[in-house]
Image (cartoon, rainbow, N blue to C red):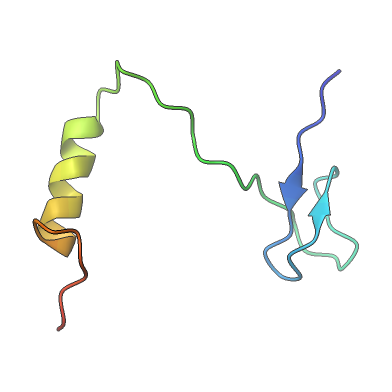
Length: 61
């Protein structure tokens, strides 16, 4: 059985359980694996460009 490290968003501590010692639920700190067959990659990139612009910087609103 393989355990995965999880991080508590409240206190920042790494744990192996689903719930941290402080009582808040822990989450996986790793991003999703890259897949070249990503069906939604084009939409995600289009949304990022629309939101942050061509150069990737946040627009001042």
